[in-house]
Image (cartoon, rainbow, N blue to C red; front, side):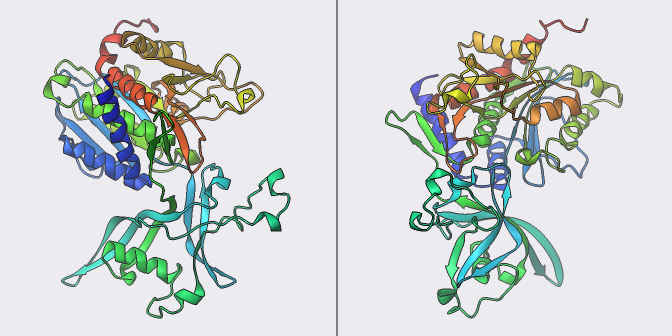
Length: 463
């Protein structure tokens, strides 16, 4: 890939990140990109009329999105070639009653979502973003709409305690997430001058700001799901401009790379001319909290999609089982790069590095779903396209994280590999990865979509 192409892919990624402060916004951005190139939206609560050679997508809860392109040579029973990732990241979510007042400070009550590095949220310029349910009345009829909102400017902050009041802080900064992690929104001295703000379960000034942003009245807001967000934009950085500094790299990096790979591998009619399978990207919500929700990877969302697509081309219920055995899932979730200041935290023979390409994740206890067959497929693609590849195994004396890979492998019965681009500062409010690895990931996923059908035909296992 030429430098100009690398620059385009990376700048496109930066745009995706800056448009996606929440899972809702990430899905909305993915939806716009799919519609721009001709993908047709289908609705889960309606009947589907699908055709070979066509491209579709659906959303669930507007925080999960599944896009798929059906090969022109597809027949029921053929396989699905899937890259799966997730749209959510650790963050602070507003409580149902977020209004907190202490010592004349107006603070915002928040819940911790996922396993965040919460100390990194202190002294950051924060705002709020998410979705709002609005009541609208027209001609005596009431309807309720789902709207996305994002306040651009910094409106709150979690201040640290001065060292003069906590002399032992540098011996270990311990965060009480209930009492220490409340963002300061305003002081009552200033806000009480604005008497027109109505009271509710949230600070009236915050509700008014959201209403102003949406162009509605505060009493039209029925409910919302908002989270605190860092206002610092994602950037290409480093002395050699080789890094990306951003929040939510885990896992918007893999979400972007898989989505762009699918779009570019299905952009023209000829791309699907000889395809006998279905190329798919599935971006799930709630991975950071276990995936057990109606829109998480632990839900029937993936199986529902495979079933409905298969059944659109046949009435034979046995075809789905055959299709699943011909399918393959790439579970794409960011990986831990070797940290130069904590090298002893890595297994000495498995040291993934920035710029080193996608990392294949292995775990004998099935915390990752990779095996010899699934890893072979990804290695062969890397070899053919001269792409770098790395391996990761956690140390035996440390617990191993997990991904959507084992959840979907066991729930659906699909062959799976766990991979991810290497990064530093995972689950910090501000993470770090390499420009080159965005390029490598995109190229690897694109090659997977283009070549899996032919490669899979050459592999013999259960015969």
